[in-house]
Length: 584
Image (cartoon, rainbow, N blue to C red; front, side):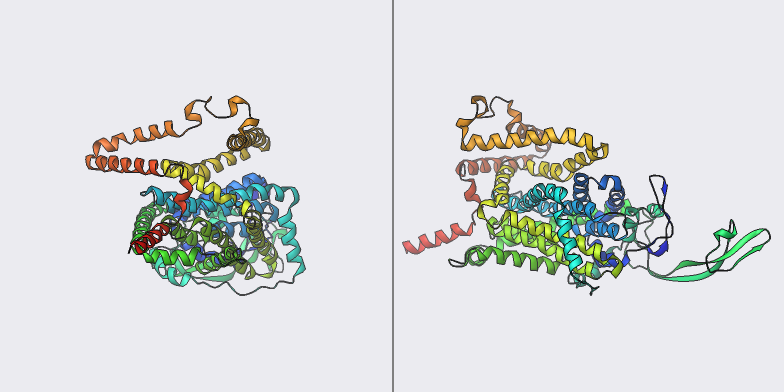
């Protein structure tokens, strides 16, 4: 973050004019509280996130920008955080708005990893895990499908850039008030006693300040004062003297006067690590272990609490309230009201990750149906952009247009995605894909971890590596892979719907080795790798075997009825009540 100072940057060996004043603090100050909610991951990976954003040559590639947005958002677990870095670079001129649009799209994808991780906490019960993982990944599929359609459209036509530019130019938008800090009132007193971060360090790295690499992310001094003094300095010659300042020669040296700003430290912070002489990584790992323990404990307790509370008639009532549509002919309005509710709730908590992670356990236990969770998730995508819009309106006049344009790009990207994948029931493909993935992960629960690693880490890293190697390499590798994937998808669809049009050998994948078309061989490998633990833990082995036998029985009972497993379990309770009443 540059507070009106003078900065000399160098990119690719080229000198940059030092008479450039950077002033991005007002633009970014609204996101400061977001960083304190992500202390652990910011400490462990914050500087890496800054390094990723620094390479403008890579960011000019839209595909690379997309995966960079995914990776950085996964690292810091917040699309608001990664968006704030993008806004700072756009506001300071280091990144063009067109180059920033794919990064915003990637940030939208990366933020959905949190509720997917939350769904894994319900892996103990196979049917709960089926519903929870489907409820979490419906967000993933919506974001990925939206990017697959809208990113090529944006690259070809620049419609998001042109639309937002037209809006910015059409209205005389003035600097407004700050966005309300609704959640900060609750969280800030606790987080300030644990640790405080110097949020300017990552942004300084991203914007190219070499001195920021040696700074610590842990804030030591919370109250400082800047004092500007006029001091005498020596310069090589009279042409180097400060304009409109005294310049004289004394003892063979040329002297002039210049304003120098000195920061005086007044009061230290009060968090628990202020006196700990530990590196950032060590502090981050300590907090990571504690936070993971607290997170897992809270999630397990939430699931158990919900399971104990939402039973019997309580589940029936809640199911009716949340999942019942309006009477005909206004049934279609229910989903759009759910979108508004999701947007409003996300605006209140100021985080789409928090909202979607909260409804994921409810989907798992069957209180909220997947069809109702889908519009709530879409609404959360809109709600997370409203805070950024209000924050952009609070920026100064010289940076208002660019920062507001990026925020509007994020908003209209989500609106476009909703128009693609929600209004017509046939187009609600994310629901069908999420159900299919939920069935797969319920049968092979290790696939959930594989899915997380592949979609949010390995795949983005692979695409980023190919992008760094050059667009020729990216096209040479990516196009054949993309064609092969499309071919496999088309053949799979034709095998189910019209196999008669396929050659005989393509009507099934049995001609391939079994590991290439079935998870069963891989499941045996994963199961065998757990043998060491099972042979060492007798009691656990016995429990695992009994659980496996129960699950095998459940699989036999629910075979060919996978879609029914997404129904609310309260329905069975309601039916049992009706049967009992009939017998009485």
